[in-house]
Image (cartoon, rainbow, N blue to C red; front, side, top):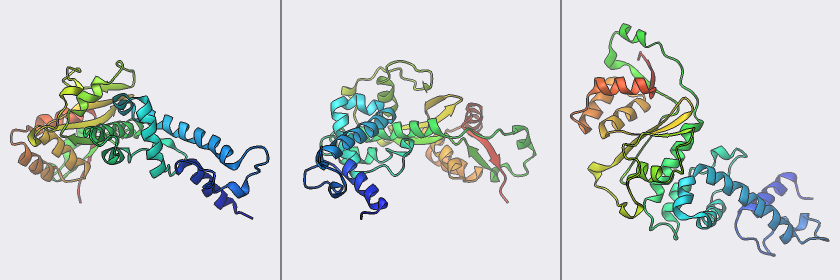
Length: 275
């Protein structure tokens, strides 16, 4: 008799491993096929499973779907699901690998900006679901003995992303309308066409900070120096090291003004003193 665990594994395999054929249904010996063949029955389950998982991916990657079209997106998801199964029943955890998949997928790899747009959408997804930051009493900062040795804490919803493409503009260009739970702070309001998108020079990369402000997820363009500074805080570097690293990349960065801005925005949510 087949064990329950094996039946469950076989069921998942038959639903998600790709195109079903009459001779590759692992559950064939455990299904009553007097009224409907094992191949036909598992085909019904497979169609339902793929539709549900694809719908979840559409919610996470709406811009990717718009860029490639619904039919292409569904076909891409089918191939993606066959190579990368969900590891839990929580679909909020699924889809992180889509960006790398798109960069290698033979029918999409020529659209080189898709990977970074997918990275942006996954970062947006993570920021939207992240915990709220703890409340900090900033008046205690004046009591710190050596401010250069403290470690600033960033909000749990912060995600940093860089790209050689104007991915924030691509994202903004593909929004139907301003939604209640979405906010973009891009300086450009969509005056870019997809026909004009090309890789930029390294010194003109796009640097973005994504975070949630109350119920709105924000995509904030930042400078290279600001990106390095926030990266340092994210990695729990001391304030001193973060300043040195940021200044090396952007000599004219104003640390005081940058710090004030990110505290006011809630991107920097607190600080801890080192031992």
